[in-house]
Length: 449
View (cartoon, rainbow, N blue to C red):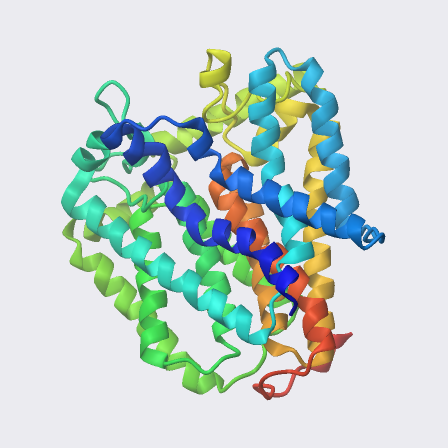
């Protein structure tokens, strides 16, 4: 790989590895503890993405050869163009820019990663290990903070408003705080853990790993997911695992030997959660109140969805980009936050804009499916599982988004789409290179069909 290619992927890798700490450090601790309120500092990730975009454009011009556009590129450009055309019609330009950033920044990262974040088999495994190790550290911190430091830590570090924390940080009817890790919301933290679990389990399946260490890491992530009390993340995990399985059966590798470590991981996760006394009786009660609609947050979600549908019927072309979102009140003076990723996009930019937005997600899934098949055909097992795991993670996020507006949480969307872009970029490279390891077992011929 050339020096230029390494330099182009460095800013993207920096964003991927550091973005998880942005909400806690840059958005909360620095302003509350140090008094640093710098817009320039908070936009560090945008600067790195812009650096990659500019360097890539200069490189293409210097070579006097423009890259061909894929269907994914076209869908991203179409949606970004729609956002740009929507800005003049937004009641507030600042709110419009806020909305365009929420919806478009992850797609920009996806397009750049698909072009420049090319990894070989060993690079993929190194990156996944780094991400899982980072996620374990965040998970341990999340359980420790929610259990021992409690809400006082969050209030002291700028998470609250007027001396109060948002009610979503607590499980309805229970006194203890939900785990949020380095993020600002337990549901966002839950989705982050789901992405790491799906990618870690998928890619780890094709590599030689230390069983106890890897299973222990996954157990810690599972325990933190339970401690987040995120129902949307749990449903997303189930849907993502199912869709990944339907894409193709996983590469076969000593199933009997893998079953015991995975069961052990689940047992350790359960033991970790049970060891925190407050969670022991809360989890089944939380599930029961959800199913019976006795949970006040569930009732609130249903009412919010009904209000959003009513708003959409009155404004099929949207009320203006940036008018909805968890932080829209900062720019508009009033909070409008539809409790669904699908409804929040439609309420903002209308049904047509919503179709353009979700077309990017569909194009991403289609491209990952093609990349998975191409990597299988080339015998690049790690790359194939990377594509399959990214496919499952995108499905998980799309499913969790049915219940909450997680698509406007830029940090977790950057993690998701940078991983998806890296998987897409790595599949063609793997096709041109010899596989670095022997196949873990026979691949079902139907996976190549």
